Image (cartoon, rainbow, N blue to C red; front, side):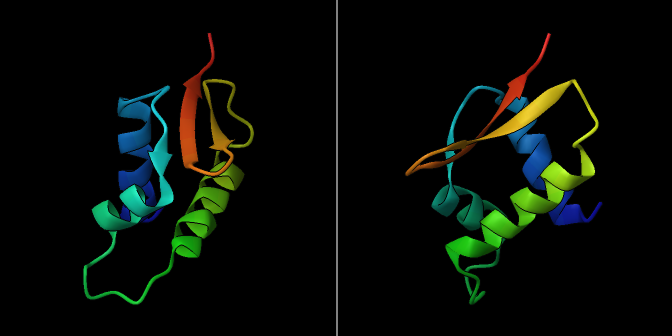
Length: 74
């Protein structure tokens, strides 16, 4: 797992159930001088989902028109 992947996942799990917009995640984890687009966030979320697809502890859900949130499973 990359540092950026870890940081995104840590933030999302720390505030499970809270929706984060793509822009918010981009602002938090990419340099202001970066040319990254909102699609970069989608790529990282896809990577995280792939890495944790076998876990039953949490799920990263897409919030249509907004971004993403984590849901802790009991």
